[in-house]
Image 1 (tube, helix red, strand yellow):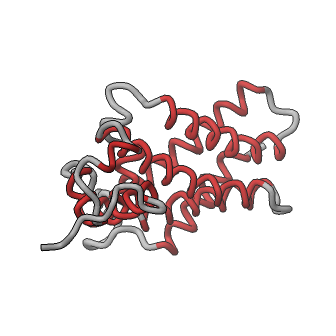
Image 2 (cartoon, rainbow, N blue to C red):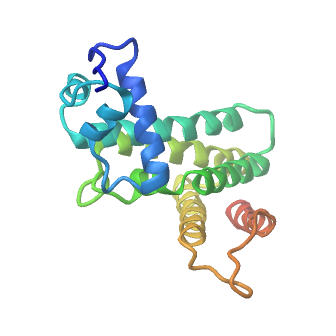
Length: 200
């Protein structure tokens, strides 16, 4: 019989989040059990509760990790010397590729008990940061546009990117035969979104 390791491992929190990330990638978040993850990382069933008081707190930590990854990529783009159009396009491509690579994590981040019926404040903060980063290239490209106009264009661009990404990820877009749009088509579609957002 395997001996349980002490709960105070060097990085139990990180080990649990890593195991949770793998579980979500393979199965989604709905059936995730923190006690089962504890067994996987070799600690007692109660050990995770020293770091996560309940299952929701654990799921929230997983979602926050996902947002941090996404924000790191966005920050690199935002701080680059690229044009506003190139930044906006890169942000759109980055979001869609992250969604492609992490479809079940995206469900947790945007369509789970963490977002409905009430959006968790921690996730709302990340969404606001992301939206502000997305608006900046529009503001920089259209310095004479009013704040209301910038807001309208930002909302329209984000809605287009998120809506397209979600429909593509869920397999409800079939422009030809049974295939979902390829990344080549995605590139061209984002170009259209950018043109609309930055049209003078």
